[in-house]
Amino acid sequence: MKILVLTQYFPPEIGAAPTRLASMLLELHALGHTVEVVTSLPNYPSGKIFPEYRERFYVRETWKCIPVHRVWLYAALGGGLARILNYVSFSVLSLWGLFQANKPDYLFVESPPLTISLPAYLYSRIRRVPFILNIADLWPDTIVEMGLMGKGIAFRLLLALEKWSYRRASYINAVTEGLRDTLLKEKNVPAEKLLFLPNGVDTQKFRPQPADERLKEKLGLADKRVILYMGTQGLAHSLDNVLRAAKLLHDRSDIHFLFIGDGSERKNLERLRHELALNNVTFHNPVPLDQLPTYYSIADSGLVSLRALSIFESARPSKIFPLLASGKPLLFFGGGEGARLVQSAKAGLVIPPENPEALASAVTHLFQDSALAEELGANGRRFVEDNYQWSTLVRNWVASLLANGTNSWRSQGLN
Image (cartoon, rainbow, N blue to C red):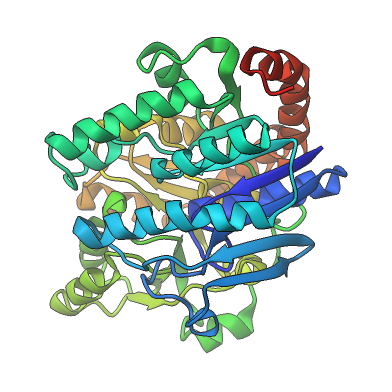
């Protein structure tokens, strides 16, 4: 099977989408399928095109074993006109990249942004191939609830685009059970169009291992109990409340919060760290995917944080899974499907969102009970081994796709 992936975000960028797609595509390749990618020149989460790609319109390269076609876009973060230009420029120019790639059996489209369903549909009709719309976040629901957009004309246009996209896609793929239920019950997506591929983890790459003491020394964390937050630092993550919890723990010189990543909120968070005079918080730039296991090795606990918004009831953050696979007890600072997963795995402590006092108390409790921390870490490792290995998830997803493919092609006149 040949799969062409259209996504605005891909390694060396960091974040949920690049990490998830990288793992998924490597598994597809390992299963013998042919994969190509059309994406943008790397720019996320800094909002600036990476130096080695600047002043270029189109780049064809190989990532790992996968051909990648990169096109220019207007790089930007945040909201407003700049972000609209960011999405629209990629949606338009991605067509160039799509027609540089080989004809696939399926076009797999990563959303958000939902705007790329437009070039995806156009390409699918011209090349006569079905396209799969992967829903990792509901647009426009998420951006409205987060306060990034009002319910004006732009909202109504996005609602229309959402309905149109769901009708035109051959399949809709959901990454969480909550999203799947919402698509079925609230968005009226027919059950026969729905696929399910949840986030997973490579349990060979991410596994329990001794702490890299040289890395701890390099980061100035020798003899510290490290709480690791790995990933995007954005509006969705309520990280200001994590810093306020760190303030409550300022008298615990052995506890340190380590943030690895970047995002639209990083500057604000660093400003807050200065205002709160925190010496138990460190921010470091993103690291390459291949280096992630070493950073997980120095963590005594992982941290996942989400704002208290109803839209996150269906969220299952991808950063959960490498932490669990690495045998780390998890502090889940939020609610919804992600919290329920951690509780069912008995792999961590769930803390009410946006409650710094409760988070500080949970940190103290976890680090006072080494037996509990060890038990939670071991439970998490077993849980992902049994349920969330990428190899099993992708194999099952492919079987489901192929079992239904012929009927979909015929119904759309694509055979």
